Length: 149
Image (cartoon, rainbow, N blue to C red; front, side):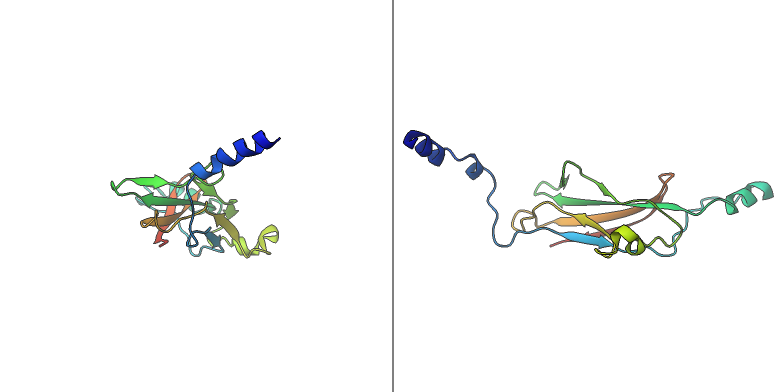
């Protein structure tokens, strides 16, 4: 028993991992709503029938994706992974003013919560987040990019 304890004390695999300071922590971003979304129109419709069909289409089916990126010393952007994924997605809502805060299952949190892995300020000086809104047809509606530190 004593030999096993000494061996375990001298060979602790968790000490080989990165040590975090008191300035490390998690980031939570809450997506509440998006307003006045419109699909991009590149070209006017050629005939009246096509224009009428486009105007009668259902509302947008909007989804948001969230990612964290850190630019390292070499200038390369590296995606941070949270629970095995580089991109987190929220549920799809219909309409040009989707409001995740009004969804019954999200009322306690006030909206859809995106979470980060453990962040260390000293090693992530150039960390930023991106939230991209797109329609179900993978049409990009807009994007926000914001520095974290």
